[in-house]
Figure 1: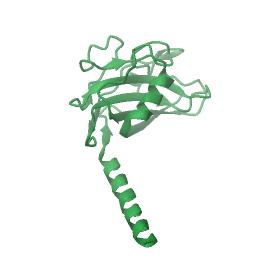
Figure 2: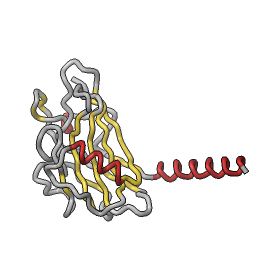
Figure 3: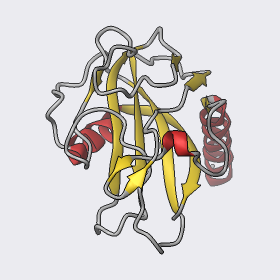
Length: 181
């Protein structure tokens, strides 16, 4: 009986891994290194601060909405740095156009909310690590969520948004790019 249980548990875990791996995030604008297009304009950086085009596919069954974040775990803050948080993206949407992170939100799908980043405002805030630091990782993540809307507003703290995303995530897919100066 233990052996059968062990086999069933292993098969279930394997199926879950295969299923989770089908949810995919892609971007024609991102590669291993961020370009000046995705670099912040401020804090001593002089980039264009344009969010990249993001496309995702094969969301799991039961997805009711999506969220997108950009997070730098290498920021010398003790808690990382949130560069972009967008949630309440309708389940029918599978792409954000280049520049969707503009603080006006005019290129975001209807109903989507951009919340406050660690820069203090809403919208995409590009890479801007301290001079001389090793290159930082910028993790672009799309979350498939089990709710149509998160009960949050644009002035919600980034950590609270992150908590709610983890609480409601069915699956997530990520891309990592680097930037140093």
